[in-house]
Length: 336
Image (cartoon, rainbow, N blue to C red):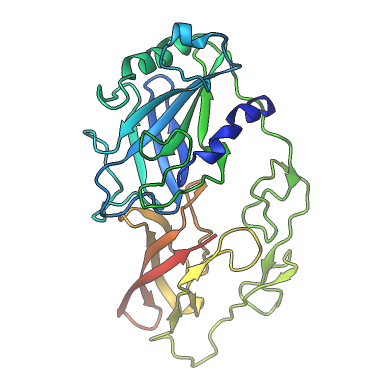
């Protein structure tokens, strides 16, 4: 990994937006790119391009002799116009490539126009995968093709430096030339439900501590918790549960700083007989669902954290003392 770092450092001056390659199939060459942050275009933009780059690691001497599409900087660059068929700029009705958007396309189905190096680039993809060196793919920039020195502006009129280079490239080989190295051993708390969860830890060191109710009289008493959290109690005799209040925060910051790291409706949980809470992303996909008013959303979907943005929540519930259904909705913003 360190050996590759010096070779990728020049990209820091060219990256646009906070882009991430979140999926890549070396057999089919389908690639999925996500926007983690910033706006990569505006509604007024009509022309724009992805500039993708391929190279070998370790570098091949006289690589231009075999592949003339390699530049003197050691990379083969290829323009992917954002308006070629099957390539949608953004998702939804806004027409903007922005936080939360994902784009999937096939690297071998490149247009014949643009840089004019498509055939050579495909040859690198197909034959280079069987070399003794690793192939490296990265997002070089999202910009006009005449901006190889990193000086021109982004689609929205100003540059977007990519501050996280490490999620901006993948390396592969079809003959086992570059098996991925094992992840570094980082000790810490690996339980995502713990108060001091360390998202980069790969080995649990037994340091996890938990936040919860420390009152033994509460119905959600947590005997192993050492950090004080909210307590819930059974309704007092005669208390009216026909219409208990529900309060839902409109923002939270799941960044593991132990402050406002989760989202949950605040209500008298013991009053509810049926409860269904769902959270949707901007395209209507369910990212979290709960049937217990005590549950907390950690800002995740499956095993990955969702991008920053605004999410819609809905709650359908019925109390023990009434058959009247409660249906409410609202939004919550995720910020890290």
